[in-house]
Image 1 (tube, one colour):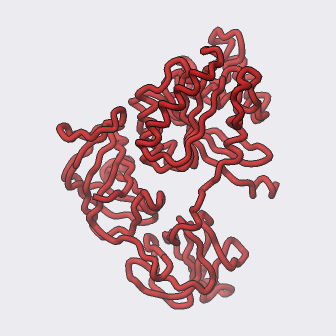
Image 2 (cartoon, rainbow, N blue to C red; image 1 turned 90 degrees about the vertical axis):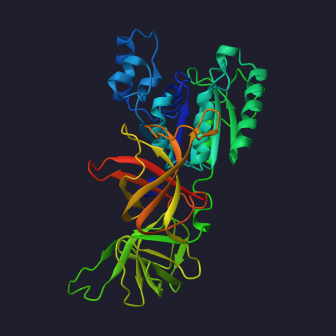
Image 3 (cartoon, rainbow, N blue to C red; image 1 turned 180 degrees about the horizontal axis):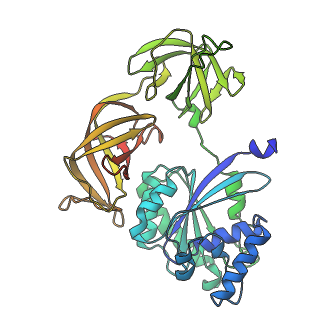
Length: 421
């Protein structure tokens, strides 16, 4: 059991155009990797028969909503968990429709890898560009281009190489880091878990082999140390009369006993006395561990503060520029006040201006229409009620991201990434 808990976890998101076979691919991945329980399989068999399918429809393993099963599409983000002897996985199966852009942003926001499906018959389409842009926007380290339905083009190497060449141009324009290409057939299982006998010309990894070996959180612990404080622990019991620790999750970097640190926003300096994890003490902690830090000095620290290594400060300011994905049916309102939740801090913010919207199909900026509606991505400027302590999203996905909340309804209305002007 301990071995399972200590296994490395890869979070990946799947995206593609409608009917590209995302849900079927995930179903095949679960089925062929022996990650489906008997009762789940029986339920899928029954549902497949009810829908008139002659064989098991593996897409139904992920399409859990009744409306999805009836329409044969994915409407919401469906999360699935499975494990192999090498690694644990969390899959976010996101919709292909343009009206569900916000769902893809939600599903991809914590992903290490994006699997973008391309129908071999149709090649690169607008949705492919849109999903690739979002992967680029969210700084996802690895992109896997899964060219699906190869069985419907006669397993043609020429078709695969043409799509690969076209996508390479998009990847270069979007500055995508690590792009991998796999020809497959999700329906029949070619190159999903097992190598395909129909595509002997392909000598690369199967999808599962690739997912088992891609780096997870590469370089996260090499970034500058950021420790947003979630909670101050003061037991005030006889056994822990003088105990004071600051609990949180390391957003990035590493911290060791004896390190000189600075508490923001007060700029008070101290040194690390001890690092506690549950009932044991550590000499060092790495992101993304959740730990409690004790300092040698009696420092005024509270929730929303941030502890960083001395000399390794981050930006502090109340005027910030964001790329925001709007999540709500009510349009963004310039001049309106929203709750800004950033790491463990919460402040008020006023939208000062909309600089432009992004056409995520053509990758061009729209300046003649600045009404930001649901699923739009826009560059905005905000003024917060007190300074935030942040990094640019390009440098740190945790301290560079925030959410906007409607103060009246408490709905999360926007997901923001802090950028340069």
